Length: 57
Ligand SMILES: [Zn+2]
Image (cartoon, rainbow, N blue to C red):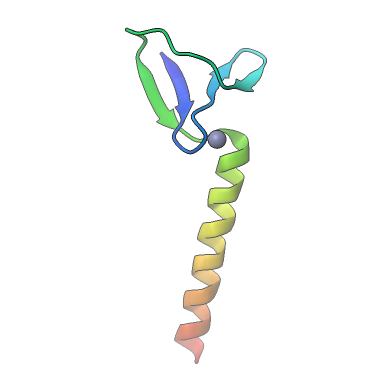
């Protein structure tokens, strides 16, 4: 099974993440590469900071 980043469509390889053609028949698991994961976390944190501001206002 191969992990593919659902944002940038890079696949995980033994030496890191790279864009590459995925062989047909390979089972794909959608996830996040470290780069997109970090961006996603930052977005989620911003969202919670914003909702905290609204609550205290
Ligand atoms: Zn990615």
